[in-house]
Image (cartoon, rainbow, N blue to C red):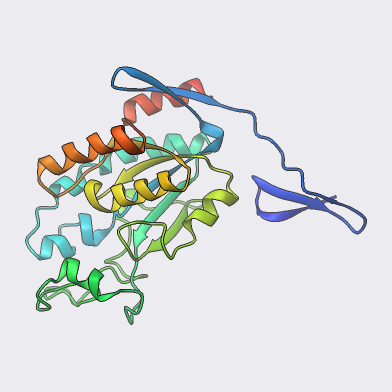
Length: 255
């Protein structure tokens, strides 16, 4: 019979006389890591990583946040840990999903409430506005402003999803993609930890995914108390917290 489907993880087999809806069951590949005093074991065969908003406008010295006076050095902190982690995840067959802000050029996917978050007085460089120094339009899909920083350039086989909210799930195909990949566990990295990363992680939890934040692969330009509150809430309500070295050690177990 011939395979039918868009993901090798989720295929029917069909021919003119038969249709088999049986999927191949990938054998579990356990990987164990620490979260504080506890060991957390996940199935690498059912895991993906979501890397949120590691984009020029958030992380580059010539991007939007830097242009409006924000110190982006905290937003750049996850670059080096992600550069160490992502190649190992690719070798382990873990899907890399880039969840990036990407406005339509006409901004018709943005409500007034979203504009207000970044331009509360209607007089500054908000979403889709041209930056005074470069003329680049803030976080416009397909532009340099919305591209992933060069140090983390996506590779062939990676998956990209454009979002238009703090969370990567509403009004996007992210959930459909993950279910087609038969993913159950999600790792999280990116910026800002207390905003887009946290909102996406919360929504993933609400949808039934198991969630682990990779702490050194996520950061925020917000005050330190925001990080403390986010870590507390993730551990208390929404999932677990690990780090890159612990995850790399776990991947060795799953080989």
